[in-house]
Image (cartoon, rainbow, N blue to C red; front, side, top):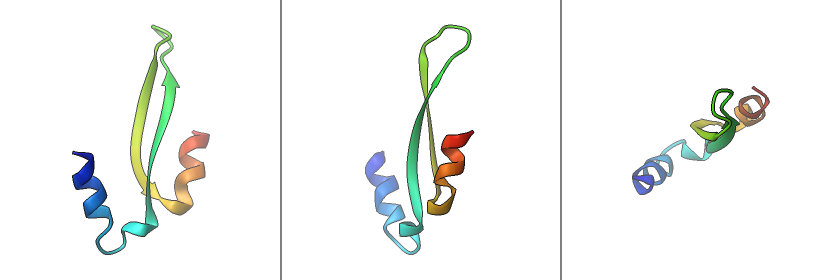
Length: 50
């Protein structure tokens, strides 16, 4: 499945996007969950600051 995402991002304006993954600790269980998103390059810092 990742190959399809990468292949589709390489066409057209895909170089303006970045796939980001952030580990978030669950308040109930204490286990880590991973949040994934594809954001514009200039919005990467905003994604991690939230």
